[in-house]
Length: 442
Image (cartoon, rainbow, N blue to C red):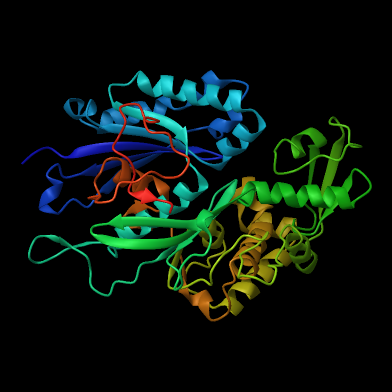
């Protein structure tokens, strides 16, 4: 038999980067070509968008994971190993702030990867719609709702398989993608694929700035602007917690606008008050939930049909709920009770209980309430549809995220009868241009 093939995809997120190493049988036509994840290598340090003033540092940061991959992929397979880097909302924000710096960072990571003996096919910033759509493909590929290997030893579309929706929460954006029961009425949120001979018409939207880290930043900025002094009471942080942050550090993102009166060097003192009701109210104010009369919406006026079917919630949704031990299909009332009781604990109690999670420990209450607000008031899940949400990190021993769906698409591992352009692409964006895309936004 032919040796297996490998593929490498860097997920360059807003807060960190991971390199995913995938493997599959070379003769994928015979059908056992389910792609498996060999390893996920976590790049040390922050996301590549943090290297705006030191682009070479972004390239250098990737080397230990590339070295690791070269130990895993056999030497004779390396030159035919397709390798990609996709950057998400952290780089979308940097591009908004300073497109030259964003290009320099991408040039430096490309240069670093180009020094390795792989089939490097380019580094670029994914659109929010691609990020959501590729996450949806990953979930449904791994759970075999798209295609199954039958007893007759051929790939076939599973009869009556219900496709799953995908909910992704990153550091700087959040994505919702699902197959609605009605035609999607808004071209900007409509995605069409043909996969394995079946047409899929999906709804997908990405909300920039509504990822975990940027939402916490918007929350702190709102609390700062409501307080007339350098002392900020934070209802979502545990009572007894205190931190200092400068105005410049707080307002270092396009998601928040500094008031003109604030001097950048001013040090703000943030003190937790552990008040879940006030926390919920402050988080509500980050969203505009009014829809206007004409059509259903998510939030901030973005069209969204009613959620339908089962959903997988991964990334930040999973990590936060897993920390609170809420990933076992608990009822909404149980989730609410657990979150409230956690939010009422003071800093001393929380620290004694969870000594291993100190870095993010003070944020779990705010992120949990943020997630509940986003899912219930934003995406309009309710107490009945709550049980359709499955909080998961992996399926089939593979991390759930956009990277697998992306690689399946760009290596043409999904037979594509309808290759059409995604809006906003120039052909030839990839070095060694790959035949373009299974995913078309119609």
